[in-house]
Amino acid sequence: MYYHIVNVGFHHSHVLPPVTRFGAEKVVLVYSLRDPEYMSKKEAEKRIKESLKKAGELLKKNNVDCEKKELSGNFKRDYLTLRRIIKKGGSCVINVTGGRKITTLAMVYAAMAEFSSVAKIIYVVKGKIIELPKLVHEIDLTEGEKNVLRAVLEGYTTTSRIAVKLGKKESAVSRSLKLLERKKIIKRERKGKHTLIIPENIILG
Image (cartoon, rainbow, N blue to C red; front, side, top):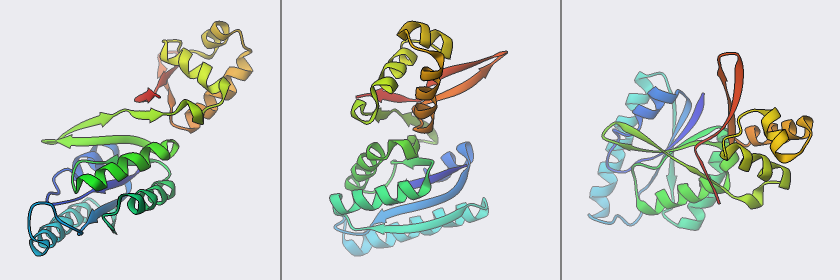
């Protein structure tokens, strides 16, 4: 079960579809009431609060625990706050669909910084869920992890094949795979009698 962090602004229709599809242990609705871009502060606050109320009611109907967290509207401060929320969640779905652009950017940066705690980064358009790739920084990986990950990205899907390609012992490759799996960079899928190693939705940076 995932810990969803959802950016909410004037709309709430993007909140429930990912919860229904992926499941949710908890949903944190993040929002900012500061410096509205297109209308008076009073009108913006009214619309955002209505949206939060409706999202909360929908989640309650679906027996999903919900928390609301107001952000400051300051990029650096919100980036740090969101990193703490992501760390606390452990296996997070980051929903960047709604809310203010500055909050969306803070969410994306926080998700990149805490990629090992992020399962998915998503955007919802007319009910359709688009999964965005996570950016994996090579600087965050050991040399062994980098080599194994490159082999997986090239299509080598078993420990034995990766070991042969790299000229390494299977035990060493297996250790690197376990670390990559723990960081949610790769996953294992059962195909008939075989378990295949495949990359998560990532971009290697």
